[in-house]
Length: 275
Length: 151
Image (tube, rainbow over all chains, first blue to last red; front, side, top):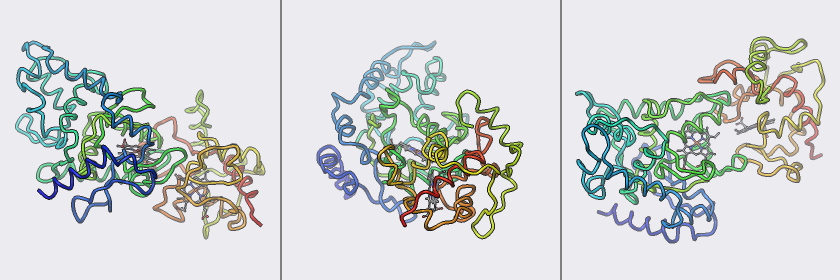
């Protein structure tokens, strides 16, 4: 109970005072790490590192360009497709109810063919499409997939990220952690070099954040559109001249779970706005 | 080396054979934080070095380091590493060479890339198979750093 009160206070800050506070550097809204072993002293949304203009755009639902895709997602929810003659709504009815608690808890373990596997929202969407609707899988980072993912995650906007890393998820968590600290590419850097060791500092013109995932899929000026978390991972790997892993593949799923843990408690912001 | 049109060819050439009169990446010896012998027999050039230092596709050193004398002509200096103002008062050319060739020899945990090394990397795409900087670019950058004096 106490937690939810603090959380409401935090949300108040994010929507009102968060970006009104003038100095970018000393005015982070942060939350306490989820446990004593957590690698960070303070957990901060990427929102805090962006300019006032960018933050204002995210905070205004009518101006936020990510909402165009959200509308598309709402429409697709009701759209019948595939051999079974069903839409998402045929099985799940009202998304506001049935999808509550999804965006803040994925990626998570689900059973497939009797085996526990780690799944993110995109993979779950495609599972429903191919298995339950008899429809073709959507491709990563195409508007249909992005719209639906944005819509589902947006149902949980403001809810604290709460991924489970125990039990069957533990090996994925360890894999994600290893990848986070693994140096890759010709520039020979790990995610941790930029997002743990130097967040808050400028690397050339870029103000480094903690590389948190709570805002994804995000609208990025650089992309002139909305993109997935795995697209961002891929971009960071290419920037350090590394061969990226496949979007939707096991490595990025494991990384997604591990980063969920690093951002445990941050409010879901989808669709966020970034530069 | 990082020209868009021909990166694979040139990178391969660098990775396998050093040019005549150059020390190959695998043969550079770091002793007591120094590389005494220049990597090429052609002396470093200050102007070319300044270019390689600032070019985002070459050294991109400003990503992490501030150089006050470059503020007029180059925007956005990073703040990840120490400012390099006066660096030539503190370090010899041989020490600067060691830091640029393989910064990890002095500090294994550093974020600074190793600019003249080809082993020990993970998941490097074919087109980046060579060193980040050529031997000559390293020498040129050292010549440029030699001009950064306070005293």
